[in-house]
Image 1: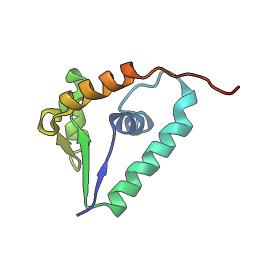
Image 2: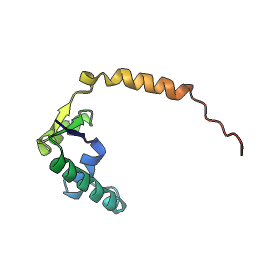
Image 3: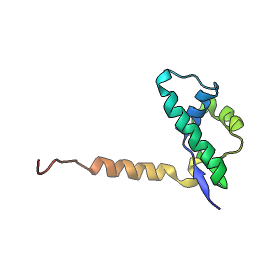
Length: 101
């Protein structure tokens, strides 16, 4: 079974295009269209669509209803908190340097 992982930014962009979410700027329309295309491709070519269920609390249930064909996965099930801490520590230990020019 193939699955597509959709991020919350993609879902928000689709909501802006359909008038379900406000847009701060009309400059984002081109990006929103690309996000809609990505969602349509996921629907057409993948068996299961999933999203990490970490969107803003006040909009979370509404989003689940609007995208009822997507499986929302609790971040705790995937132990994402541990991964975030590890990634943060790794990023903080890295010091970029410019060499040779």
